[in-house]
Length: 534
Image 1 (cartoon, one colour):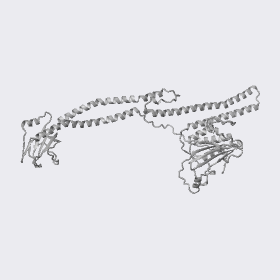
Image 2 (cartoon, helix red, strand yellow):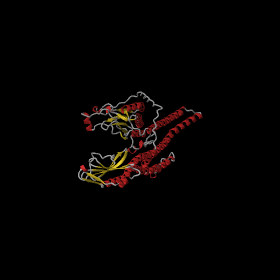
Image 3 (cartoon, helix red, strand yellow):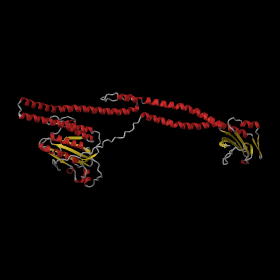
């Protein structure tokens, strides 16, 4: 197992990202009205069905108006048919003048009739009356009705074939009538149906409007209650006071308010703790400044006392600056909460840069700071390009590694060792980040508490703000991972005789590989034997 110590080389500053274009405004979507949309979907079918209803009413009126007049024509044809008598080749038709006058007696329509023999001879009536279709089958005794024209007028014709013995002796009896009365009756029926609709349709629209206004009234009341709330009122909305259809929406709003309330409570507690923690260094800084001022005013001016006061002021300002930096890191991590990690980050290169930045500090503290990468952990059969790339945010991951290394250097005594390790796990498709030290370690009872803001392990004499591990836990959570904390004594990296040490392990999701890697030969044997050191 190889262990490398990166040298403290100057790291070039990353190029600034191009500024986002200014002045580009998103196209504002037109706001839709729920009231108007429901009204449209209710009135549009109504207005579409209304002309269809008029057309169907007109067709029904035509049939209703024709039915009684057709029955009268059928009775007239049957009456004339009873007056026809066939004797040999002669056709006798007995129709008196009074009867013919009564048949044609109509003040509105013109009535025509025709009695015609099988050979085409006209027995009686109007010879201009059209004949039935020639291909139509002749059904003796059955009266049929058809539409036809005579002298340019549309007529309704009822006709019957009388066959005493054979088709050669068939007699055709027809009675036709113009359709003025039928049209007049159909028009009256349509008027009787349509005129009420002209009154009912506006009333229906008005009733629909009033129903929508009444139906949406609970939404208006809910809107009013929300508008009247105070800005700091995040109590849940009563679900029982809203309609059942709106209940899921109100429940979702309540869930949001609950999360907002939790966030506000966390922020208030965080700000209170931060203010409390900042009081100590600021109060010490002020006290040392006042002591130095008193010494100068008293005319003593002892250089040793002044130097001691200045050193205390420098330490207090350093603690305050460190705490402010960590507070800003925590705020930056919280601001990025919920953002999905999509950038491909080379965790090996990132960890190497962070370790390189801490090399001067480790040398001053007499601590062996080293880095172990994938080339010293994985067999050659499993190594491949891009094996330590993860999906995440480079800035937050750098902050995570920096806080872990800073925490390890804080609690590792002189002569100890701190190791940063990056080990890809190709079978779990993760990259394991480990930071372990040879310090006093953390008791099992406090391993959950050290990740809370401003918490300090009992018996700790090292200066610190208690924010570093809280920042680590938050960033790990945002990347879909957790921080595992255990003793480093199990690792061979901790020299015997020193403290149990602490080992922080974080598993990050591995970035997708462009080309699939097939495990064959030695790699397959390693996969089956599960000998990947993590």
